[in-house]
Length: 77
Image 1 (tube, helix red, strand yellow):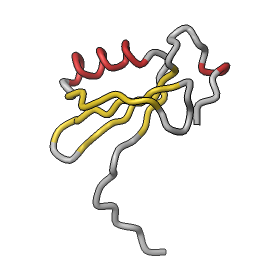
Image 2 (cartoon, one colour):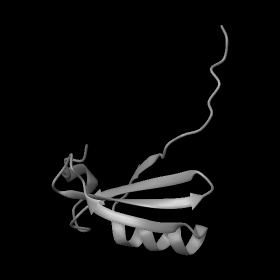
Image 3 (cartoon, helix red, strand yellow):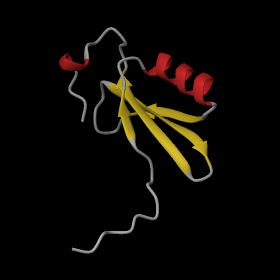
Image 4 (tube, one colour):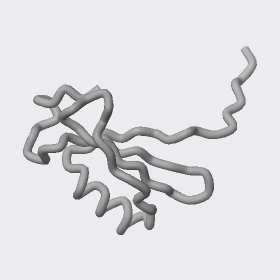
């Protein structure tokens, strides 16, 4: 079987418990640039934020609007 060549990824999505705390962590620890935060169109109980990680690399964080909401209780996705 021939291997598939991957030229890049658009952006991985990471589900987080606390979106604001995660934004602070990724921007402070890794120096990523916060581009925007918007409501998650697929789930009214969550928001999503896009971070620029350098070059053509991006990361999307998705988390509940209420940071006290447990992920197991959320209906993300």
